[in-house]
Image 1 (cartoon, rainbow over the protein chains, first blue to last red):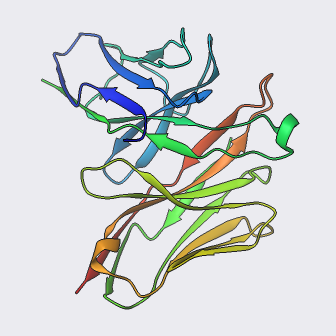
Image 2: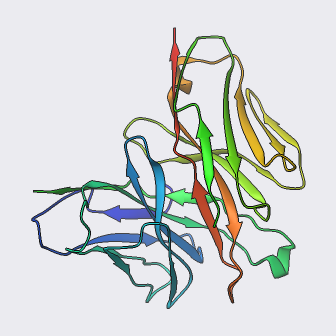
Image 3: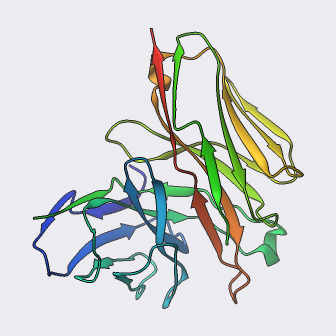
Length: 120
Length: 117
């Protein structure tokens, strides 16, 4: 359900290794987001992308990288530079529309089921 | 950039009582305020939202109010039921002044609501 799929559901990584989390959506959404969820800290924005081949850093981008080569896909790479990568990662896509057309902004986000990354 | 604060972090109520969760935001240009519910082990899902041109919105037992002057908005759940138990997140859509008018959705830290039968 939801049309946005994350894989894998669980991922284990050795210290010093890079790892890539997959996020695919078939909702024809332009905007995609990556959030990190830690206990007591809510959802913190890592990266977001409004359009293919363009993306912006969120509040906690250090140690992460993304690409947006296709509208449907927004993979997140957790690099060895990320000091505390163990967390639950959520991908989302939204129906955000430019304010030029609507005079406002709607940003309903649909979430994937998440990937739980553990560093071993 | 936008900063969203959410209170309380945990909330316990008796079944049938009301629950209120409050959020404040910092960017006066924010214009869209959704609320998400995350049940244990599941993804967050939108339950209600409000836009900046509206002061209040209701959907059955849930309602959201917005005070643009004070930059705060609240979620109200009446006649709570055990299935309302979940983590609730508020969010604010912060418009970025870039080429694409990108909207950045910033979340609060979440409120764990427990409804006891």
